[in-house]
Image (cartoon, rainbow, N blue to C red):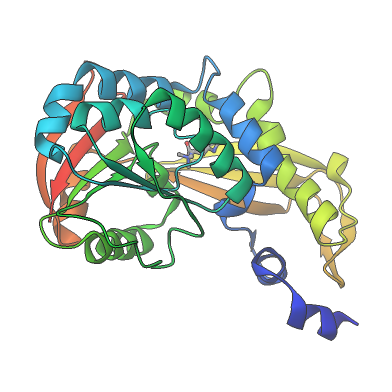
Length: 310
Ligand code: AVJ
């Protein structure tokens, strides 16, 4: 039975079996975003402690014209990991984009948000692609040079090597004379970071714990969710916030036909959120075949919006 299941498991099931079999158990952060997880993430973006979305949205609005000048006018815009795409209308309007290609793994969520966007930007042609943006999905044929949009500091979820691979992949996909508008979170006071990833209302905890509930729902899991606690830790040497789900007692459970045990205090590492200095951000551009062109931040350097050129 276990073997039969392993053969027919989807991406999530495979990742769960692989991740839960490691010594330090781990799950890739992209699996947070089922319908419930996507809704919880939307809630996170409105939390007082979670500065990321507010800071980036403000930068995109305040500097819309200048960003558009560097990103190029009248170009198709391709967004990697579009989600609810709330920041997108600002960029689309400022650049007078004729075509918008959102790529997102959560197909239903994508279609819903595109309906809203169609109303917000009349006349825009929308060509949604449901899929994993880390897989080099071929883009539809688009007229002229293209502008990529990768907001939200999603790049922070990738370790350094994978981040560079992804940025190189974007460069290949977007082609000649492309631009990339990318949002990257900055290194800052660890207390501010830890509060942003462990809010007082417990929404981030619910977002993290939903991953266990998702395993129970979709992978015939028997995980006692109440035996797990959300934790967010700033790792200074690696420049990242780590999210973990820590077992508060010894547990044994089944997922996708296999049995796993954890000791009290053992964790599942569920997310890395890397923070970058301006120098590191520019180094990443150059190391992945891009040329940094322009950069905007607020007075406290809370967040950075960059335009890179191919
Ligand atoms: C969507 C990956 C940018 O790392 O800040 C928010 C996800 N995790 N709170 C981030 C997240 C916990 C978010 N990204």
